Length: 52
Image (cartoon, rainbow, N blue to C red):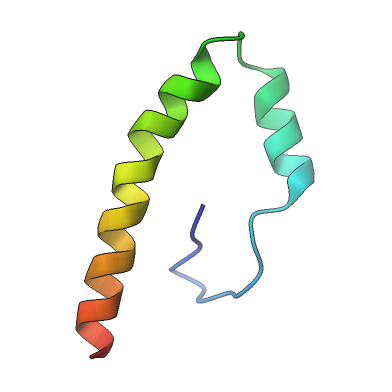
């Protein structure tokens, strides 16, 4: 996941991912990725266009 607001080059910590995964059933992580991935793509494209 991209952390745009703080412009950090650090990825989201693995511990946070593990904590979230522990709260989801076996099908929910894939559904979450299907929602987050397009939003992440849009954020990256928007950010790249605003910098260029």
